[in-house]
Length: 202
Image 1: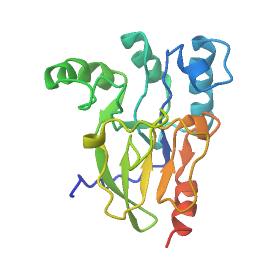
Image 2: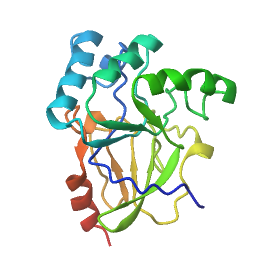
Image 3: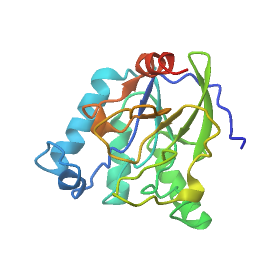
Image 4: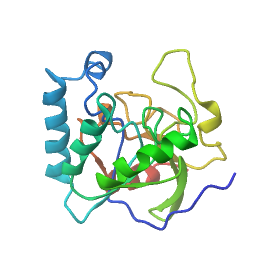
């Protein structure tokens, strides 16, 4: 399977912020007292690490809740920001029709996002890597594996993903690295961390 190749060198990787989504706090046992508290911490922790000149790849599920307010909140985030749509993004081919996607694309772009395909190929530390919202296997719901036709095809390449809301970045013997905020103290993952993980793989 061939996916679009990006020459962009990203400085940070992250996923699944769910800006403005009140139910994500109890669902993932997040340590926030309200959506306002969570939104503020997301922005603060992002901007403490990401500088305006950094490039960030967001692996989807940027927000959920009041749409335009949630998306426009993200305009406060530092960096040159790219989005791989996740199932909760209104740009997702897995959950939305083309006309709906095109209707909402300008809102994301007005907030500073460059919209990418659902799966892309990158080069990190000299290695080919896939990036997607979805892992090869696994889900945020137990015993369920949704959106199979939108997941990347496993041809042996390492994969950087979100979606699962796991508190672990990796699983033993896996070629998948989870960059979701629930596994990284609600902070974007630096490129060096991904490179160090890739160095552990055969």
